[in-house]
Image (tube, rainbow, N blue to C red; front, side, top):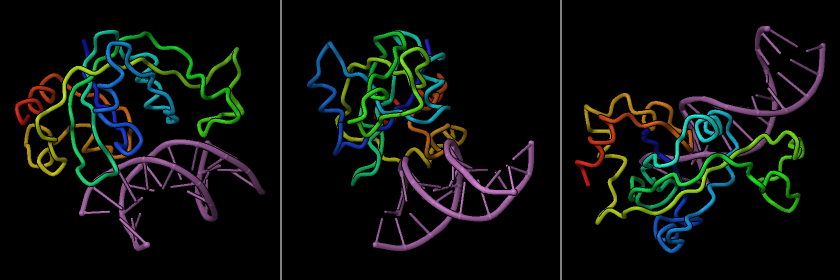
Length: 151
DNA sequence: GCCAACGTTGGC
DNA sequence: GCCAACGTTGGC
């Protein structure tokens, strides 16, 4: 079992939106960064736990917990010319982008602010803080517990 | 809205 | 294969 952090802009899709999807969860489409893609494609497993992070908003930070509930499948939006995530270089034979289905587990009573995460000595090496702009990043077990202890 | 960080693209 | 230009992310 591995741990991850996945970012979402709550104006587009928040932890409440994920909760409203219920047990079916939500296909995590639109990731168009190779490093993040590789994490989703090769490194995640069904049952992995996810810190659900709200970015680019008033209250930036970890909003709750989600879970990976599917194997990697091609992200269909890459084939759709109408989609903002359309990739003309992707083909059905050779998809470029993969996604996982993600479901809601828990919403924290209050968001854990990014500023608070930055103050934790246990989190200085956290990928979120070291490589800022990645939308999907790994979390170590000790980082996972350090973050949860703040909730 | 600004701007730093950084990934991607494309000319050579 | 280098690297400059450009685009995107995302905190503040």
